[in-house]
Length: 271
Image 1: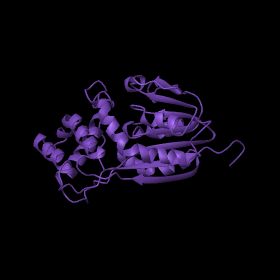
Image 2: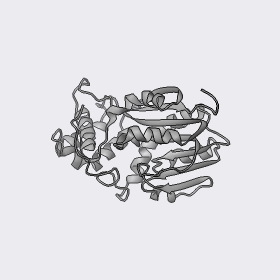
Image 3: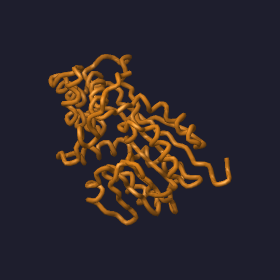
């Protein structure tokens, strides 16, 4: 879909630096749009008392805290490249590890649940990382991966919103290597590393004025403006129109969806 380009930066450096004012609020808007779906799926998969969990790219810790509070797991290890938002709100059972999961030797233990949301799509070695995360499961443990799936294709009706979305994906591809064309392959990738009971679902949050997801995209475009305009697909005036469109009663569009894929490590002695 996009040409191969160098990757000069990383998430949190080239775009979305955590020290930028309001970055935690932007992350939390995404959590408001997706957390209920994520937590419901983790509950359905059995997360609960007695479970030890790894939350990769934990952000502000919204999923980790709900695992501990609502689902009653005994421990969550929350991992991120920058843990300032996690460390700001300590909680019993929540351990925090600042590291890069792409680093050689990343091996924080074995877990009943390994969860990563909106992480792998930003990392170039996502295929290898899926295999590595699968190795962190205890027998019978479950790997749950969620990432964006693009519904704003060329077939969608033309709109300021659609042009901005295409510029965002291209701009993030150019600056940090984000690639959402991979995400439909996740079920096969989980199957290929030996996980069983592999399944998937897609959630598309509704876009309407003032909704968390509309505010999330407006904030995201504001922070990624330089990368987006550098693509030549939009200019500053186009982005301003698109942001106003998100808060307009005329907005009628699909948000990018969240695809969630899961699979279990076979039990010891099982198949």
